[in-house]
Each structure stands twice: as structure tokens, then as C-alpha cells.
Amino acid sequence: MCYDIKAQLETQLLRAERDGDAHAVEEIMERLVPFTDLPLHHSKGFDHPSILIYTDEDPYFPKVSTWGLVPEDAKDKSFWNNTLNARGETVFKLPSFRDSAKRKRCIVHCDAFFEHHHNGGATYPFHIRKKDKQPLVFAGIWSEWRDPENNGLWNTFAIVTTEPNPLMSILHNNPKAKFGPRMPVILDESSQEEWIMPYDEKNWEAQKKHLKGLLKPYPQEELEFHTVDRLRGKAYRGNVPQIADKFEYTDFNIDYTKWA
Image 1 (tube, one colour):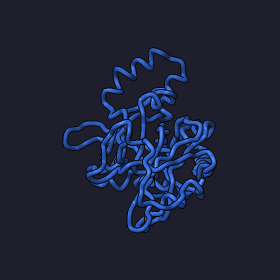
Image 2 (spheres, helix red, strand yellow):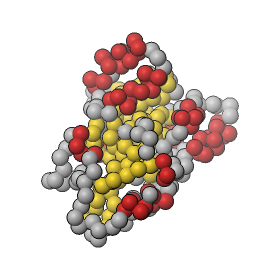
Image 3 (cartoon, one colour):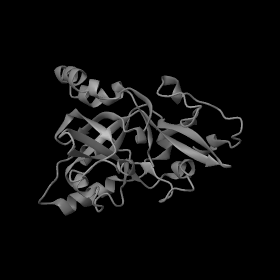
Image 4 (tube, one colour):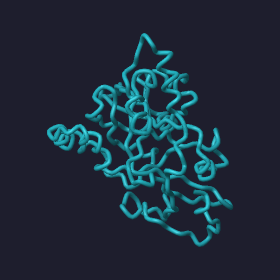
């Protein structure tokens, strides 16, 4: 699954900057960024960080959104630890996700994500990013939810996952994982635009079939990875830049470089 990410402000702004509207970028910095938790050198989804997402409503002007999707008709957000990710195989079917998958798709820009590899009763966190150092652009879904307690409007999102490539099938080997190894859906440039195309009511079945075709494993040869220091427990250093640095474990005797 995808429960740990790295997302820098510069990465989150690249799409807005690509549009060439300097005023819009300035507006984002003034109006939106103060309400995010950026930069995220490392953050767990279970902490529900707020970052920027891009939607079909304005593909180059982002929304502040909190990780952990809360459907519009939910009475509260108590279950949002269970909606950090949405499986691509069922995202168009499950009640928690299907309305968002149909009408509110988004893309999420990150620098990297982290996965925990299990070996010999211990876990070892890995940092995964693109070899060309370009942003990872995840397929996501989002929702607008009004809190009945204070009438506040929340934007929330989930990251869509898919079956793993060979590398991720090794890295993400949690024996307790209900659905086995997974990985986030990483979109290439053309797929990004297709994923956030507006809902086509007249041709929805054809559009849905096309969208499902985008939810596939990303080629492992375009990714690089290394072990990092602990992301859980007392040894965790927190949201600091050094958290993504390579860290070698003396008790981890597997030559993982051969997995590439």
C-alpha cells in the first residue's frame, strides 16, 4: 500500500508553474500553502497531512486536501484511516469510493514514497523515487465533506493503488497485508491528463473502461530505491530532510541492490 510519502512544496507547485501564470502561483503561496503541512520530508497517512492536489475543476490551480477520503454522505470522519488508499480493482464499485472515482478524480505530486520490507521478524523502510528525480504523480480520488459539528468544509483524498511490479512485489511483503503486495498508481504525463478529465455522463461506461486501463504497475526499471532510517518508534527522527538519506542496517544481510 502507500502510507508514507515525501512531498516538497516545489514539487507540489510544478504543475501550477508549468501553466506559466505567475500571479496564480503567488496566489497559491499566499492563500493555500499556509493551510498545508508542507514540506513533508516524511509523513504517514495516519497523521492525515494536508497537501495540494490537482483536479478537473481547475487542472492547474490546486486544492488543499487532507489525506484520508471522507465521502460526502459520511456522518463523521472516524473511518478515514481505512480510506488512505483505494484499490484500483474496486475503486469504481465500493460505496466509499465510487462516486469520487466517477466525478472527483485528482492527481497527487510527491517526491517519493516509502515502503516497509519484512525480513526475519524485523522491518526495514525503503525510499522509492523515479530515477530521473522527476515527481511521482499518483492517481487519486477526492471528496468534499461538510463537518456536521461545525459546518466546516473539508477536501479529502485517497491514493489509488494497483498490483505491484516485480520490485514492489519484493519490497512490499507484509505478511499481514490483506490483499498482498501493492503499489501506488504512478501516472505518466499523458495519463495524468486523462485521469482528471471531467466525468462524461453520455459515455461513462467507455470512459470508465479507459480509466481502468490507466491503473497499472509503473515500470520498475524507472524507479530507484534505498533503505532509510526507522520511520516508526523511538528511533524515528521526524519530519526532517535527513529522513530520506540512505541508511545501511548491519543486521540486514540481503543484497537488495540485485532487486533492481
